[in-house]
Length: 109
Image 1: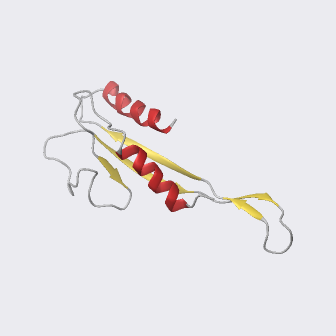
Image 2: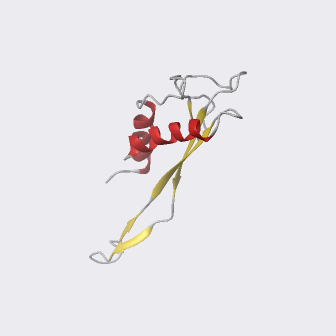
Image 3: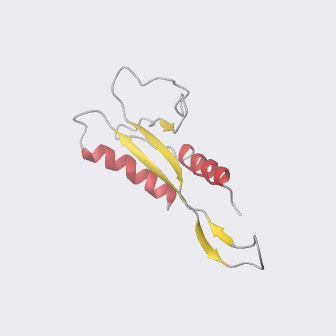
């Protein structure tokens, strides 16, 4: 059975290897929950406004699945989800954000 850590690392690998680009074909940096540096190794946001993606991996409450063979054998399923926020420079328009969001969605389908 997949652990939360394995699922998070698999999500990260898919997104970081997905070559996500903006409308100008520039790579879009990915930022992750509780990490100082982005996928390009930069600890700060650039001086010139540029698109970036911030992703959180959230573990949700477990749900009962079935009764087991006795005490302590009941089975639960833990759910998780990822949320990605796409940030684009002001006046870039919704098209730029949707372009990046669609690339992420296609990677995860």
